[in-house]
Image (cartoon, rainbow over all chains, first blue to last red; front, side):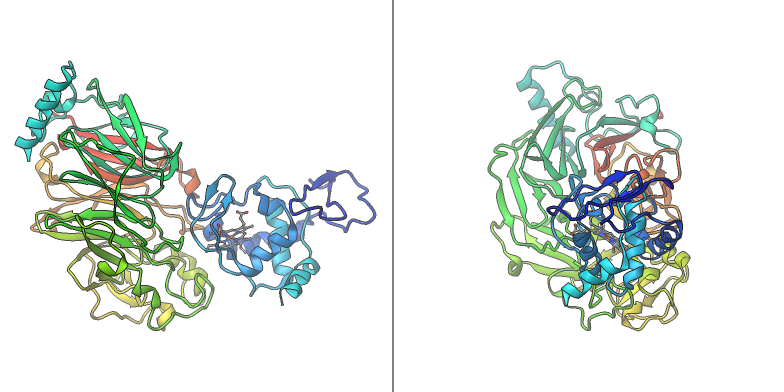
Length: 147
Length: 434
């Protein structure tokens, strides 16, 4: 993945954003978004601590109870919504990759913005996912908007 | 019962004028000794004690949860989610080879519970209990029009399934699982303390008793028969004791929620999955305590001031059997048949669905165990009875498991049926030694 740079469209058009994988140089307006190995390593360690019980080491989740984090529209889609799920938790009867999951997802708001950014960058670039990283600033923006 | 079943079987064969030679016809119900159906060459991929064999009677059915077998060996299974508008499948073996060759469906709702008693089939959604009238062959007469026995049971997503069993006195028992892990102010959130008293227990976290023959009952018409049970999926009425036995799913995530008090390893191994023998009014202690299977003590939950050392729940029931943590007992059956050897008579089979919150350890369970009983009490240690459901490899995550045992039922000839809600397999385990 090293030589590749993942870039988001400058604007998130509609809720479902399709992330494009383009060769460098990235579009000038795009933020630098390649997941550095340090980010991934931090994200992985935090994921292991805070998410692994429910979503499992390989992101496959638990049938009927906890959804997978593999190529779901939530993981790959709109980052604001994704960050919101971590800050607010999630407990709605929604279909995720064709199935329903009955456990509640607790809020992770106690984590720092940087920690949430690292976890989400890791998740969006693991388990077969490929998507732009999440920055601490983006988490801050969503947290502020929530207040 | 055997007399009645035989006459029904005879009647049916006369009416049908068929040349069916199913196991039931050939062997007669409850005939002691060997089964007449042939196990699969690989015993359906299962590892069983010597003398036993297994076959897959059906596969790919959907998320098959609980199962009921009629007095002529036909099968009702409840699907977790309705498939093609069918939440209940009716499976028949018309040529007697043990394999399902005729299938129909009805009941456009998902759910877990299903039970045959007398002239009715009872089935549950995650909120309601329905019943369907059965004919002499125990076939549903009007699948499109069930009667509602109870409606409005609590379903707040978590621990939503409603398992049922009936006693011999016209009562139906249903679990209403707690919509919470351990009654924290903020569910499953690190450090959040327990609500005192736990409000969940008013409407959930227990077993409710209703009248089996009264229609349209609401919550208030039922009795909270037993409380302090976090989530029960496997339950059975023990006929020899005339008593309700249940399997509790113990609490999750001791380490995640209280990392300074519990290591990951302790969290993987605590608390026990417990079997309880209930009386009306029993309190099994959730959420205030959990059971430690190593010290055999009731421990104060960390949400309520526990530290892994303080005990609690002096008045709470003690378990009848304590199993390893997180294995998720989803089916319980007291064996009353005569096909299996004497040792199994009146003992308990338990289907363990398999764990999910033992990470980063390998997951555990995914098998059917047996506990011998004498006079209503365990008379020996539990043992693994049927293993191999998950497949060859270690299970790191539940998704790695090829099959997950869920429901149990006993056939009229004493065969043991096991459902798998991962791939929709129905297994039949038989004793084949002559």
